[in-house]
Image 1: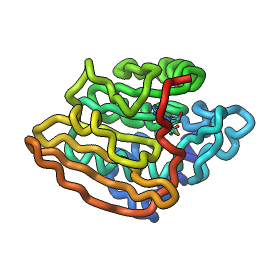
Image 2: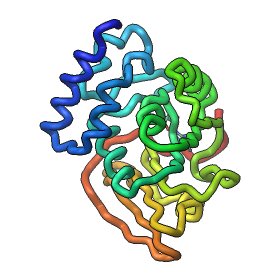
Image 3: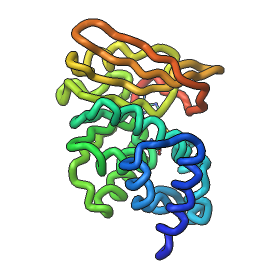
Image 4: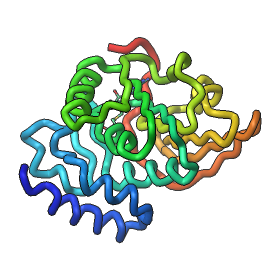
Length: 211
Ligand code: SAH
């Protein structure tokens, strides 16, 4: 898809109209080939502002949500970020273009493998991915300045709160089951402040062993 940038530019106009203001985030979305992160049969829809299936019952998040969550995270200038739910690797790629280091955990090995290949193809070498249970975070790499969870948890994972930097660490995550809300949690020392933003729709953050 040679002319993806024209379509990506139009997508960014829609994101701007929807309220996304962070120009750095918009620029990276404009330059990232989202069509490479999905099955070829869906590539013609890659620059629409919608979530799309990526196999194994999972989805690539809607560009608006990727832009919103990334902007919320970036507002705190994180350098080292943990992502839970690699999925297609698209959100990972956006983050990797904006921060120094990204660590990403995915429970389905087939998706992790595919995402890793896509990220490598784009020369994004500041990313480490692994198959694991996101409820546990990535303890050996903690603390993180930022954590982004791209699947909805029924409660806030304790391990993730603990792995957040105590000096202004910020976590962006959807919380809830039938009704999900986007939360921004900020840590200062052992104080956590919660900001509740808007209704969102994510696949569940599954509990149990990776597949
Ligand atoms: N950021 C991804 C979103 C993928 S959907 C993208 O834009 O493509 C959410 C992903 O979270 C799925 O791939 C799902 O397998 C994964 N997931 C769900 N529960 C998980 C868990 N407990 N640990 C790690 N990953 C999990």
